[in-house]
Length: 349
Image (cartoon, rainbow, N blue to C red; front, side):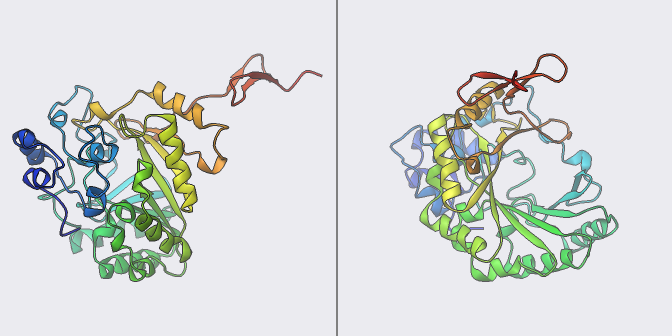
């Protein structure tokens, strides 16, 4: 974790990120949900802009104290698929391994906001990690392990290296995926030594990083991601569709292009989950579909993420993007092009 991150409302007031009049309300938010803003992210915030899209992601808001009826502490149902501590086994060929319960920064829309932060434990204990790896070892159908948390790259290089080598030694695991916001939020942590710790013979490593606004792709963040790519570790992106952050076509297009220019392949655009106190940040699915239509055909295929919804209750992700194919009679269809025109398929002779 960044030792010099802003963690208390008093620090936010002192840094000029929130007015002093808001301190009492934000103390109530901080008592419930973790707060941390790294220098890299704080430097991007314009205190004079009350609608700043970076501040909206990280600066606590009194709206978080209002919990909508449909919101839930475990919105994507991790707990129902956790056979042992630290493992989520939802899909047949892959598992999540939640190594850490802390992050470099705490996003205000986080779907695990009830499980991460101070007081939740920094990392899996040695015994819990042994049990988690034993579970993976006992299931030869597990082809991929996804390190998540919290953020696994807040851990020491020594611990990361040890876990990666133990996973590689299992033999049947062929792919390691690392989900992390650290290259964006604390790029100074991405050292050659850390990159080297993720590389091991017999294991294909992928890094999936997270940014929601093009301003987050700073020169330092791009350099951090380049260290992975230059070392042979592909980098993909995850973003969340957030009201007031990236819910317009121009911003979303700029974000996806910024990823590709940094050699990061856009992977998922998540519809925001039903995490407690996040209703003010969610869009509708219809709005998300309209944005995906705006990107289709106007941006390179390299810039197209999959728009997905994690079905509440633990039922997994499903694509929820717009549909361009409409059935007429059996074997005949109407297909929309990127200008909204429809064409018969197969075409009439």
